[in-house]
Image (cartoon, rainbow, N blue to C red; front, side):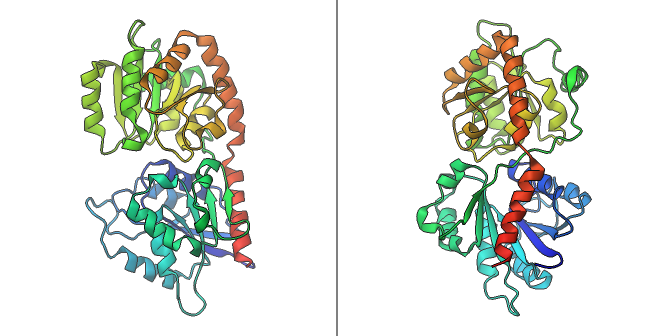
Length: 379
């Protein structure tokens, strides 16, 4: 391989989800002497990270219409993708999420003049999460991939054997957050709490994620209500936006905890808010490997999370936090209660979380991804 290879990263959207944040983190670590990376996305209203990518020197293409426009994506986006592939002559296309990945596998086939790019796909989720039609289309085209990267061993295990190609085709790469320069220490804690309007002496639990069924914040709200019984009221900070926003606010009202729950909406400054928390929590029913958990651990927070996806791969039960079964608010509340009642335990587990986070190396993860690129480009 000589010179620079032009690479297209193809995603469904560029909102503030974990998979999208990984793209931005990795974009800042690309070996620009070897790869010229561009990004294309389908959903025009999910463009929150597009300016940051542009600032990182990445050319961004919106396939689904005018960037920032609400509503449905223009159904002609596959034609725009085909035109982009033909015009830009990428040496490699790296897809994220199954719908745009399926389109890329089909549309890149048969590009004239030897212009068909190599195809690498990152699997961010367990296959059971996909809707039947998506899973079917993904499965039928999956062997067109030249290589697959899974974000965790748990995700890798869900890829059906019948869809794999022989050889070292699936590579597990644990990504990491990019928290360089993020505030830490007592001053950062005080500033975060002041900015959120939280008492400086309250016990505060926080969660970060899109407000969707798979994140199951309803169970966390129920656990919070249980936690507040019999002890000074805790505070719960819910950072994120999504289709369940109104339903979750109504659920908080039903549980009688509206006054102790803060819904912040989507925030661009999550690293600056994390120091204001005492404990990080995720009540997810499905996960690949959440960036939010790795960010919290890097910030020195103990965590209480569900035993799903790749979370048990980075957090040992009782060492950096606690693992509980999904959909069990009583167990979640009990684990949070242990941390609420024992500041020394919080400090010990938080220190262990920060130490464990040394494994979350975003630069190393991007080097591992580029090693996969090199392997498929040499074929």
